[in-house]
Amino acid sequence: MALKVGDTAPAFTLPNTKREQVSLESFRGKSNVVVLFVPLAFTGVCTAEFCEISAGLGTYQNLNAEVLGISVDSPFSLGAWAEKEKITIPLLSDFNKEVSAAYGAQYEDLIGLKGVAKRSAFVIDKGGVVRFASVSDDAKVLPDFAAVKACLESLN
Image (tube, rainbow, N blue to C red; front, side, top):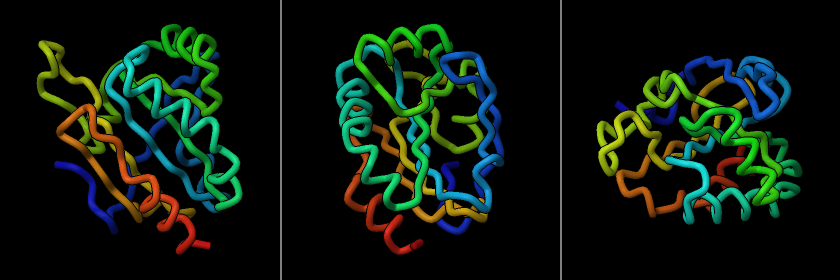
C-alpha cells in the first residue's frame, strides 16, 4: 500500500552513482526532501522527467528542498545515464527493491519485469512526515510538479 499524507516516511540509505551512501535521515531537521521514483533509466519519459527537474533544480533549492531520484537500476547504470543526459539531481539505486516496496511504489509486473518502481513523487518535511504523495499506475504519467511545488511553498 502506498504511503499517504501524514505517514512517517520510511528511512532509507541507498548508494548514489559514486556508490556513496545517502540517507534520508541526513536531511532531517535541515531541509524538506522530494523523493522521485522512476521505473527505469534510459527510457524516454524517465529521461525527460529528470532532465526537466535538473534544469529547474534551483526552484526546489529556493523552496528549501533537496530532490532525490530513485530507480531499481544499478548505481553504474544510473551514473552512465546521468552523464549521458546531464542529469544533475542525485540518483540513488534501489537495486534490491526494498525502498520502492516500503513506499508502496512498486509494480508487481511491468512489461514482464518484477518489482520495478512506479513513477511516484513524495514530499517529506524536515521532521520526516509525508506531506505530498503521488503514485501512478501508468508509467507514462508524470507527477503534478505544480502541486509538489505548492506543497513545498506551504512548508516554508
